[in-house]
Length: 314
Image (cartoon, rainbow, N blue to C red; front, side, top):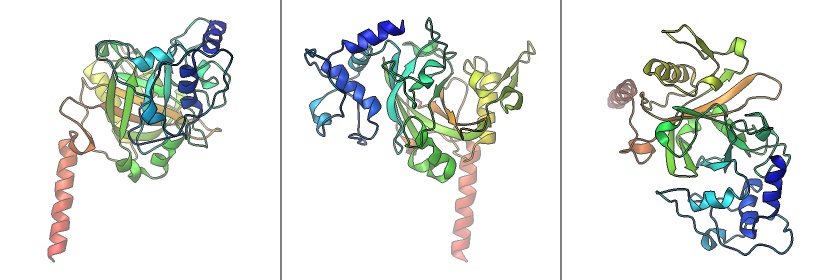
């Protein structure tokens, strides 16, 4: 199957070549309103060397999501790889890249292939951002996992999930980049981060341990907690994230909300993982400023404001 992918990648149009360069040139033409795009360009007569996008690419290309089916962007990048599943961006960081979904395809082994390969199947130290194969991810939101886990390397040049380290190094920078934008093959959505933390990656030392009250079965490790299909299970995961979080975001999260978890290594020589967990914005929420907060958090803010007012009056 891998040979088939490479053959497809070799035969794509110049548009595919231009699009692919987005994945390998993470510092090219980054803008706050950046949206990846696609154009109809004739197929090349001979292989074309991948290059960065032109400076005026945002004015040249246009991308409009389709509410009734697969997006034009997805049709474009699926020519490069059938595993292309969407685009992830975290404003305020350098996370701005494609992600893949490869649930145990033939000779591949779930979460392993894209640890060392780029979207077009070529070997790569940085690999690609990918969804854990145990997560359910498809066009129907109600059929997706309650928690979708994304993996990406902690690259020193801030590519992949490397720039997540700014949250770890200074949790207060959360207010500068609290949102995550997800553009799947079928829809665009936004998520608000409600917790981020360091956790053990080895099963015997994992802090995340959920025991099913009915069966007694134990689920160990955040990486296994994707189908949070009961209220008790969902609340366990959310409460554990809040308990271990480096920063009190005060974001309200309830059963029925859809979650995503971004996971990356902490250091190459240890077994810790840094994870960032976010929930999908609710219909009435439009930005960080108007997201729902917990009552406990609102009360804390009220008490802090009262104390500040009292001190100012003295």
